[in-house]
Image (cartoon, rainbow, N blue to C red; front, side):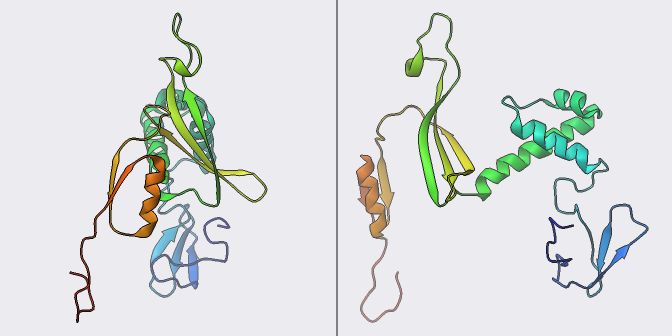
Length: 201
């Protein structure tokens, strides 16, 4: 309740705070006094339409997000003590949520960036950066004023070389910075104001 409505209940449809709690519903269902819309604490979340205790979900979130190698649905089944279909559904929902999160949040503030390699050395192969068994990544992490990490982005790249590409943009002055990255920049002005008109054609 404190996490979802820290300042008190607010109807997701109309925003009214007046409500009543339906005592016969085990899901703690709230009914708005103005529009009579019903909603629960877990509506619109990963846990919607799930009869599992939230402690099981929280344990699954921990296992999937903190493990170096994400556990499979079969591993979740063993750890959580649930059935195969339930473990698969939990695993699927968590993977979808983690993928969606990447599109929702952007790094902000102070951002630290570095090169990262994933993988190990193959027997008889090269060691270090030149290893054919390592995948290069660019890692960027946002930090707060005290230097504590916040969000991180990992992007695989072909290699750590200077970019070589052609960038097409409009005539906005800030796009000129791509030339500093050794890219050919071609600004294209799509339209100009004509005398006596107030818009761009």
